[in-house]
Image (cartoon, rainbow, N blue to C red):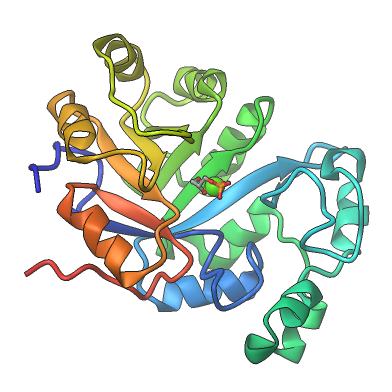
Length: 258
Ligand code: G3P
Ligand code: CA
């Protein structure tokens, strides 16, 4: 395991609760976030979508179909319309052994509701799912005094233009560039030079990066967080190849660190 860079985080291997404790409760709902906090995860992961009237909500897909009783794109619906949806029955139907009648009345939370609920007692690892939500996000972070303490908030995106915009708005927030690779890859010097201009780390899919990739990122001061890593064996493997953390649906799991 190569030494981690002097990054923004206090722990040397962080557990990021992917969409909350999403193995146990409906993803991106308060029950899933509650369980994530109880599990002792270092961060709650939140995917962001924007409603028609410009509110930020916690939702992975662009459409509401998979995780609610509604249909269509969230960006074509107002917050009132989104709040009328029920966001937990799908989980009860899909995972009857984990079903809970309380999930039948959960809503899609707004980002502000999440901040109101956990305040500064949790750490947030927030993904801009599309460009155009940066100003609203930064304003909310400022309103809830979440911008100036190191490691309270990390912002991630597959969209480098979104991260670059955030860097201009609030240069102090650590940014993680996401990559979803389809095959094993190497980091080129050119990529590293480009990343170093705005990012503190890389988020990549587990299984497509190896120890050399992580060492190279570390040499350039970039942390590497791997997604989505759910089995004990894979979490251990992520730790042993030098990753600085994992996104996992099982945030109570930990690697054996000897
Ligand atoms: O943000 C890291 C990981 O969550 C990216 O994949 O599709 O689950 O947002 P996705
Ligand atoms: Ca995500």
